Length: 184
Image (tube, rainbow, N blue to C red; front, side, top):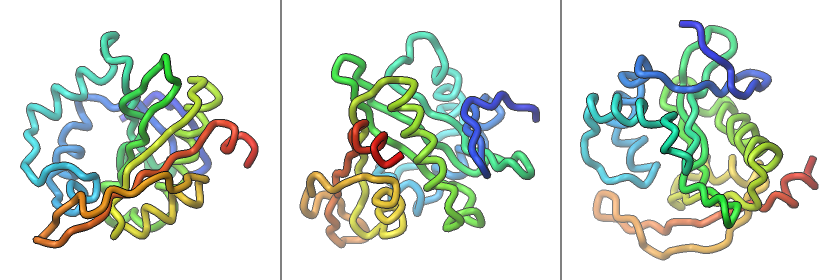
């Protein structure tokens, strides 16, 4: 499938999602490891709902989020999604959302590259002032990625997530435009 490239990176592109991507997202969002790491409720996602969500994604009425597909440059395969949600234009802030759904592509630095591309767009093109995120404290790989990209810990909600009868803290991290731009 030929895709429009919204943001070009070195090894990946960030591309608009289409209805054809619903099945891949449906599979990823029904993977409990991904769903739980994203902090979502462990309930099944429906394929029809995923198609509807992607259709609404780029509607003119949806200006509070920008979610894109993460595409490998080499073979053009979609490996995950990432972007900004809860965009508040007046306060110039948003929340980062990102996951690599293709398990064989995890741990290869694509999440770090996607995070940097999203932050660059957020601060240079959308003129946002801050981007925050939430991560569960056991997800060391994600936290390391976010720290590498300049995010700082701003808070911790203790024992806010219960998984398999174990309590985990939810970490709140953010980065300001001035910090991102100063890092170069």
